[in-house]
Structure formats: structure tokens, C-alpha cells
Length: 444
Ligand code: PLP
Image 1 (cartoon, rainbow, N blue to C red):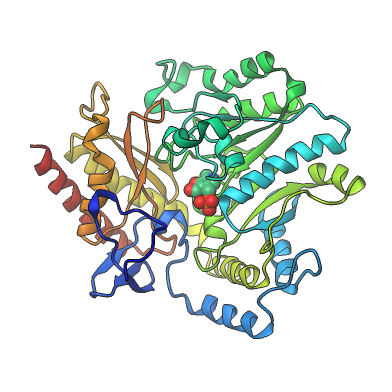
Image 2: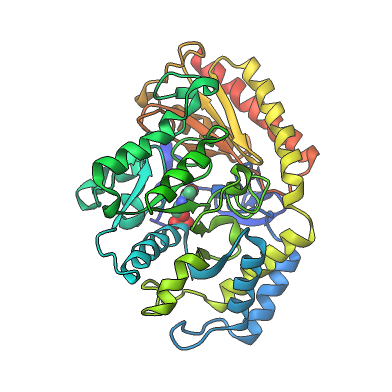
């Protein structure tokens, strides 16, 4: 059955064929059970095989699975848009549905540029971002991403968008401590704007918690307040890429809420369909949509399967399930418990440099030496080895990058379904400890 050429197995590991999933577990054709400690790629937020979602999918399939978005809308798409507007803070009321997180951030970028054009400003076409970031794999989204590994082959095709340093306190680019750092990494945005000229810049994009590129890096307390103020003072829109952090992953519907800031445009994906359907969205405030509605009236983006009724009905069922079962309210407590357990592992294994994250988006960075924070050499493939050892034991963790250059560092993300129980978290930690024991033996 190994005819899929979409994904190349790492370290010659042949991909097991999954038979079915139930709750936080996946089962392969040989009957092996995997605890999904990463929700796939931080996606399966409510776990696998949830009956309510399957029933909603069937109901929609009986009605209609596809209508073309330029001819019709559907009850499913309209209800989903209303549900999202109600769940998001502020007046993020206008949803543009797409099929992946990359399309969502790219649509957000295009919306921002179009916003300025509709207001008569043609020059604001650049989007600033941060190094050590990931906003998607398509060329527009990749142009905004500070992810060297994913950019390398295509650099000549990418837009040369300026970047600033990440808010990476464990490896502060200024070697400062948060208490007296003056948020220099946020103020870099001001410097970048001065160099380039605000009249060239449409938006600044950031993941509230840095995911794939950095392993759940959490910015310090007032970081986003500084960023938002600089954006406002310079007429630059703030795009929050909440593809990974959104839909409750960090304990609030949007992670941004925890820093007390409201974005102009938000990208959602992953947890929005929770893996039951390929669906994502770029969501704009009234301020952003107003000149577009007063002007050409058409957001210049979209795909054949945008606002697909089948996908929309599925995402609607997921969000209703999240709401009805108070899933987001429990994330903070669960995350605190899991984090404490990971901190305990840190005290046992000297190759754990940092444990970090927010809610149930947690990261572990690995180092050769915890005091000097020296990373392992690249060719040691530490992240890949740890991910493979965990998989052997029946635990799935997500490989992420690390290092201020986005190259020299190793980390994993621990992000189980938000529905995980305390007993299941104990099992996760037990399997992780066994993984680290094996890895420790490899190092000795
Ligand atoms: N933005 C963020 C923050 C992500 O983590 C990802 C995927 O990992 C994307 C965008 C791209 O999403 P997708 O893989 O669905 O295209």
C-alpha cells in the first residue's frame, strides 16, 4: 500500500498505514496503538472519531456537498461564518473560507494589500514578518515565513519581505532578561519601518506563539502591545496567524486575547476543522472590509473549493462541539498540569534546555549543554531521532525547529487533543520519559 509519494519518510522509516482513530489514539493495520501527542500537526483538537462530527458530515452529504462559491453560498457556510464571528473577539466579522492554513495567511496578505488599494494607496504592498516563523508553504505565505529549511529551494522565487528578530527569550538576540529588556525585539519593527518607509508596508504578520519554526516560543508579557502600537502609529495592519494557536489551542479562542490585543485580520486553520475537513479562513474586521465593500466589493482571492458546504458543515460541527463541551475553558488547567510534568522531565535529562508554551501548545528545546545552551550539530538529526524513538514507543510528537537563525536548534511540540484526560496525559508523559531514556542511552 506504500504508493503515496506525497511524503518522504524520514530516516528510512516506512510509514505505517492507519486503520482508524478513536479519541486521542490512532491504530495502524498491525494493531499498533499511537497516542497522538501532537494532534497530528496541532490539528486534531477534539480527537478522532467523534460521533457528533461524523453525523453532521453525513447530514450535510445528504443535502449537498459542493456548490461553486461564485454562484451560490450555502446554509453551512453562512452558519459557520456567523459562528466564527460570534466566537472571535471584537468585530472580526468577515470570513473568507479557504482550504489550508497557507491559503489563509496568503489571503490575509492579499486582503491587507487590497485594503490599502481600495483606500487609494497603491504603494503599500510589503508584509513584514519575523525570522523563526512559519506562515505556510505556498510562495506568498513562504515569502512571509522565516523558516530557512522550507525556503531554501525556492528563495529565488520568493518576495524579499523584510524580517525582524523573534521574541525568543531563551535565546534573546540581545542577551537580555525580560525584566529589563525594554522589548528591543519588538522595537526592531520601528527601525525596520523607518528603513523601508511606512508607505511601502501593508501589514505585519506574526504567530502569537511561534510554532513549527521555533517549538512553541512565547513572547514576553507586553511584546504584542508594543508591536500593535507601532503598527497603529505607522498605518500598518496587524495580521495574527492563528492557524496553529487559534480555536482554543492556547486556552482562549484566539491566543492574541491573552496579550490583550485585537488583530485587523486573523488566519485560522488546523483546529478549525480539527482534521475532519480541509478548511481554513482569513477573517477581517469591519475596518478592513469597509473600503472593499465600498469599492470593488470582491476580495481578490479564492479557490474552487472555497466555502465548500461539506467542509463548512464539518467545521461548524467541530466548533459547536468545542463550545458545548466547554473544551476551551479546560485548556489552561490541562496545559498547566502537562507543563509541570514536562518541567519534571527537564530536571531528569540534561539535554532538555527549555520547556515552554501556552495552554496545550508546549515545546521542548534540546541542547548539548544546558548551561551554555549549545545546540547539537545539525548532522546529528536530534529532532528526527527523538520523533522516531517516540513513534516506536507509540507516541506521536511534532518535530519543530529552533535557534535564533532558525537552523541551529532542535525542538519538539507536545500538543495533544484538547480533549485529553489527566490519565491520558500521564500516559503521554510516561511514554515521553521512556523515549528520553532511550535517547539518553544513545548519547552515552
Ligand atoms: N501558519 C501556521 C502558524 C502554521 O503552523 C501552518 C502550518 O503548520 C500554516 C500557517 C500553514 O498551514 P497549512 O499547512 O494548513 O497550509
